[in-house]
Length: 182
Image (cartoon, rainbow, N blue to C red; front, side, top):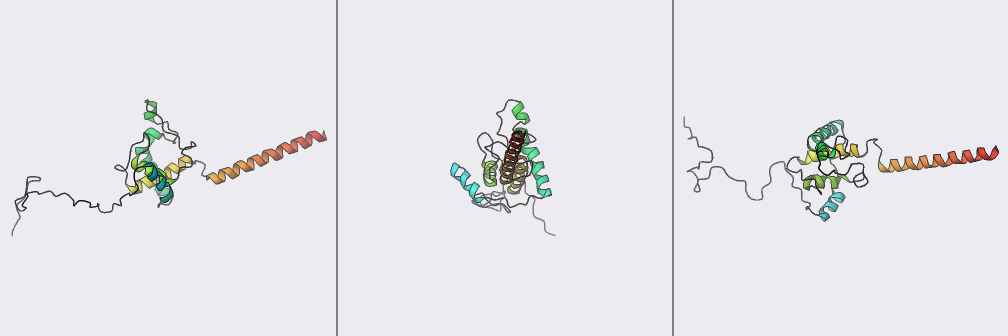
């Protein structure tokens, strides 16, 4: 039976005119399963991402568990276990990132989060080379639970605050009425 001669890796190949054995992918080719992120790394791109991108993944228990696992490995060292910006790197002297429930990040839309994880933002470096697209979306799902640990949306929170204010006003009116009758 005929056997082809074994070639030593990267040593050249006489079957090709240029004797290159290992070939580079064609210029402009995209790896299988990879979808390029076409939004530019700029302030305009950041705003565009906020308007265009929505998380394609559901907030299922499995996705949240995966997101928490990825967060623990890639984010917790700076952002802290609960997202308060108090991770070990901060304790070691690194400037703290803003807390997830701070005014600057509490209402951050998921498209801007995805853009920030992809390209980095301020002191945070890019994570596109460490996390694929699906992993970035899973981390965002988990971060959203840290932004809003009680599970209420901003609108629901505003409604609760309005209800509490009304209850306080009614209580004050009742107290005043009782004082007037005494």
